[in-house]
Amino acid sequence: MSTKLEFVDLKSQYAALKERIAERMQRVLDHGQYIMGPEVAELEQRLAAYTGAKHCITVASGTEALLIALMALDLKPGDEVITTPFTFAATAEMIVLLGGVPVFVDIEPDTCNIDASLIEAAVTPRTRAIMPVSLYGQCADMEAINAVAARHGLAVVEDAAQSFGASYRGRKSCNLSTFGCTSFFPSKPLGCYGDGGAVFTNDDALAQACREIRVHGQSARYTHTRVGVGGRMDTLQCAIVLAKLERFEWELQRRQALGARYQALLDGAALELLRVRPDRDCVWAQFTVAVERRDAVQQALRDAAVPTAVHYPRPLHQQPAYATDAFGPLPNAVRAAGRVLSLPMSADLGEADQDRIVHALRRAVGSA
Ligand SMILES: Cc1ncc(COP(=O)(O)O)c(C=O)c1O
Image 1 (cartoon, rainbow, N blue to C red):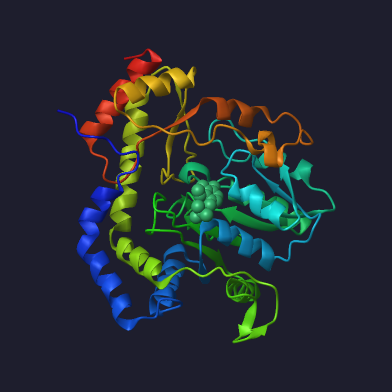
Image 2 (image 1 turned 90 degrees about the horizontal axis):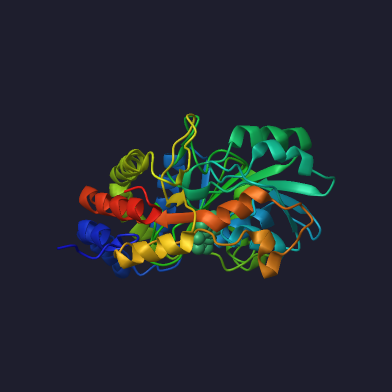
């Protein structure tokens, strides 16, 4: 008899961590410092040490992390930020919210990350920053991107919402550029039980700016040195991430083993697998494949009780809020948006369930 498959199995994770989470939460309830309590600084120290970045500033969400990083860079109306059209909307949304202009550059077809070789041609005198997204848990070619940025005096903001824990050439995601911004949305590789996020940087002045912006621009209590936001992460959410950190390395290894297993089991099937470049790894925030006739495949999987999702069905340059043809047709992003399909993935996915998913998918694409 088959049990119900979860797209992201947070229930098993909670069962494994229940006591630690309860202990951590109880401590917060006992000391009562719900805002900026000691768990906030403790988590920031732990995450900074984990990534190797000098500074970690926890914030209210991954979206807020992007906003605060761009505000710390003092992005001005009309400033251009080069980014990918194949991402969650928050990436471009925060640029636009500050009056900036997202300049979309096409993606690599085999990783779905921004194509670093196309970035330099998109630089103009208005360009202020490059914002690559480490999509599905694999970093873009950050050294190539940093090299373009260095040649033109630009900042690089890694949208690492999906890649906390990933490595690139021996360094951790979030510590690869001017800023790394991650999300602790519950289903992310490292999640809390609500909204949360963090900004990472090695620059003391930018870190101080982020700390101030997070609390309405205050450099001291009721001294509003700059314009900021209400962008803090709750103490309770920090406590939950601290509890989850205790199992995080094991979870990463499981995700990587399951990702490799999916790739091996789907080898030769009538679909495209994304490639992981040899100089980096992937934490598989999503395990995503590309298929023909996606709607039919998704329906066949639904009939087999296999939940799936589409990350993302429309590239941002074709979304009503960001529609533009100013940057060309961006064919790789358009093609990916029509074909990608994400399969169940979490550290607690069992091999028997994974076999069942693979069997159903192979049947659905006609290569059982
Ligand atoms: C690439 C990307 N950027 C930004 C975000 C926003 O993160 P949050 O939901 O924590 O605001 C997400 C989350 O879905 C994301 O996947």
